[in-house]
Length: 387
Image 1 (cartoon, rainbow, N blue to C red):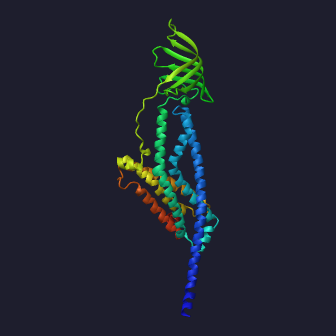
Image 2: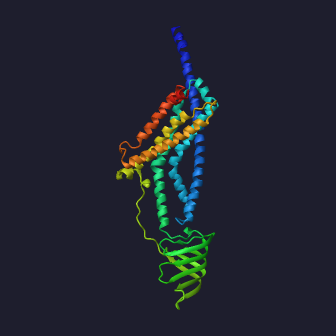
Image 3: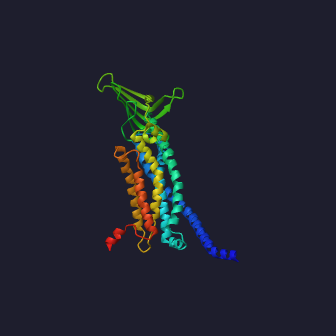
């Protein structure tokens, strides 16, 4: 009888605890699913916007002759790989903010709070999801981004060292790198065939001008040397008005492109590996390493702010919190930029790094989260002043 009485006394508490644990498990699964889907959707939108803007920029540079058009897609992919460490934290921040904001608008958070799942309980799945994404961001910031930056610089350097007809913009007088010749092309047809070509050799002591209907570039399979083959044109050589002035019509005329002298260029700091940054040990290298480490740390801090800023009062609308959340992100990123400048200028000790910025924002996020958990306004002084 005593054992039966003990079970009858304890069983309500056990049932209540099991129900609460079951509710938390349901909430976590629902949050993981919806927040992940929303984050991936936001990341896809950000990537598309980045690709559109990046493609426009790279096409403009290619049209200006900075590198060949065949490199645009390669460089675009590498620039995207460099920027993922910045886009993913923003995507997670907006994903968590939108997910919890919808829960508040649909009164789901009110229902969960009535079931015993409050703000403190919601912080666990939010931080667990943020921790998983921070690992991904750490891999992107510490390994993928430096590799992409170094690879992009090598491609650009190789393109600068090669004289390519594909880099000549139509309708513009362009001096082909390392050739000493000025080219003008009216248009470029499919297959890199140039139409109505004008070539002026600046290195010749006498005037040397070639005009041709078409031109194309070939490579000698034996020597690897590159030539520009001009077809159906005329060569004008000499001094105008002098007896030795010559005009020669031709069907085919070859111009040899001299290869550029290979120069060993130092890898930029952003393209160095983490071990190389530590080995160098200079202030600039340590600052860059701090910025890489800041990316995954930023994910965790932003997740706390998303949990705070997602709170929405249906009677007051949601735009205020959305604008506040955007403001927090802008201030946070700018504070990291200011911290990077101060660290680079020696106004902040290297041992302190950028941790003081993350600590300050983490303290603010924790304070705001505590006030949210107690159903208090974030800024009580402003409310008191308005009264």
